[in-house]
Structures are given as structure tokens and as C-alpha cells.
Image (cartoon, rainbow, N blue to C red; front, side, top):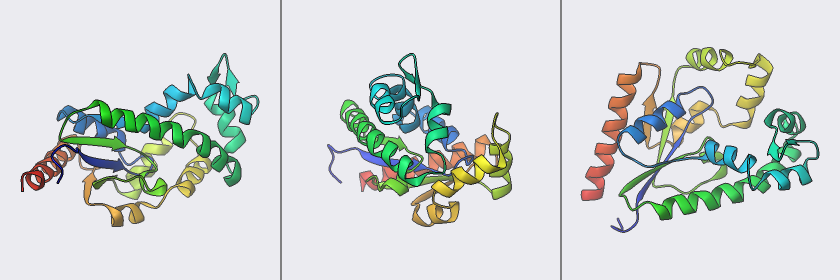
Length: 197
């Protein structure tokens, strides 16, 4: 291992699998976490808004992307969605590079929902996972969520089984927060041991 290069964990998981809570557990252990969703949120409220309005007219309000209006234009249309991603992904990648350069620590986490789908390079993949019925319960409990929307979101992502198959580590999130926290601590202990070896 290059002592000057941080060990980068890629954290992912399908919708409703507890990825965001898992990211908070890594942060609580003092590990810097890059949140791709938060980065997109900031871009939609700032530098990407004009570009998105130009590509998708009627999707901004007061200089900020109206996510519901944008979703109406891109949901269910793979070509339109690919066009949006081609605008946003390079901006997110730039923010991610700046994040990595800003922190001088041995371990960092990139919290990226489509980590495996986009082929982002990391040193280890951590997948947050739960049983299918817990996932369904969590997602359908969200405001404004419907069975159709849930099915559409799942169709855009690799299945949980595919993600698990590519994982170096799993965090089971359906056995309580303490159980998940212990798994995060064990993952970090294992990585630190490897870095010392």
C-alpha cells in the first residue's frame, strides 16, 4: 500500500437498504465521507442548474432544479436519463476528486448509490443490505412513494444479490443500529490491519 494514498472505501446499497445510516456510522468513527447524493443536491441548487435548464427546459425554479419536474422528464426514458447523467456525473467526479485531495487521512468513504453501475474505482466495496421485505417496508413508507416508483427505481439499479456478489464487506442493516455499528467497526479494524501489514 502507498502510505501517502488513502484507502478508499466505496459504500453502496440499493434503495432502502440503510446505506445513508451506514455512512453516518463510518463518519461517527472519524472517517471522512463523501456523499454523492448531497453533492448532486448542491449542484442542482448551484452550478448545474442553468446547464440542466438548457438541456431540460422547465425543470428549474428560481435558479434551482425542481427535482419533481426533472424526474417527470427523465423517469422511464433511458436515453433522457443517460443525457442527464452525462451532464451530472463529470461534475460529481470533480467534487469527489477535490474531496479526496482535501483530506489527509488513511481511510475515506465514498457514499455512492450507483457505485458499481458507474464503475467508480475504489479499494474496497462495502454493501449495505437488508432483507427484501424490510427494504420494501422502508421504501414504501417514504412520503410520495408508490409501488410503480419503487419498481422504476429498482429497475435502474443492480439487484441486491449482484451488489453483494461484488462486495468485499457487507453491513446487514436489518438487525438494529448496534449490530450495524459493530460491523462498521470490524470492517475498519480489518482494513487498518491490512494497511499495517
